Length: 372
Image 1: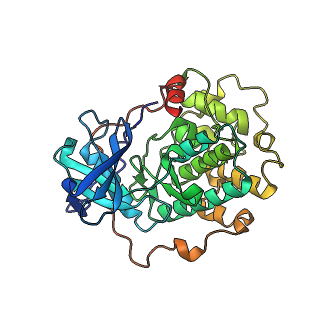
Image 2: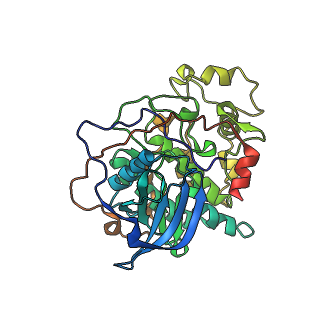
Image 3: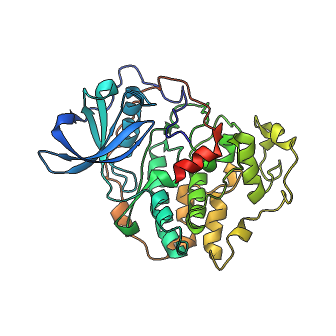
């Protein structure tokens, strides 16, 4: 699985006279402490500010980076737009760094903890997370999504690897907004993200999707937590393309049609999907079979089912999901997650410098190797 995918071309533009992130510092103000990770995007290091002693995470572009300096600036703009959101990793600024490709590095909040993917992997030999823990995680994630979507930012690559977990699960942060898009910009929008967490409308090449692609992905994350780290819609061996990924969804949720999803037949790939031999039992929704009541309560299942509706018009938004009785259990005080009472900083975007790659032609064996 490639470590990085380019955002869709044409999804963001820079308005004449607009400015990019102004919060900048110098890279030599920081001392590297440890490497946190490497990939096609470059490297992320933990560093400490020499003057303040504050620990941060710095994303640097190497000479072989799959993303450009302009795309790094674009990610910075989205992080800045989410400033104040307690469940999105904080934006610290852009640092001038002549050692890196493009001369810039992205400075972010450092979260002392693993990704949710690594968190679940470390527990793989034990029991799945209890429902109460999953509920606490989902409340934080959906609250973060609600606030992010209120700023018109759609993440488009929600998955366990892009969720950071600290203090034994008390701290939860959404990270890596490199594929985000602003729905203030008009469609069409193209495919972006990781296939196993992509919403059906994106797989079917619907050009005017919205923030509900993220809530589908959060439903996939919820299912994965309940299943002990096993992805719900993991494709078959071979290459993952739109049809095979849709097939894995149909096997669990059933085949959509005009009755359950008005307008389904008009979507670009709907006809191609309908011409294929359908899996046995394709008309039956098996989600409850996979998550019986001894694993997930009726109220919890209603949230999971609401997030995993193929028809986006029937899918729960983050805001509506949070109003469900399942979340009436004790949780962090609302005052702790309120955004500052100030006008949101206007977004200014850096357009992608290269067309989007086809992110779906990915050998599953390669993806599995990355997961380990």
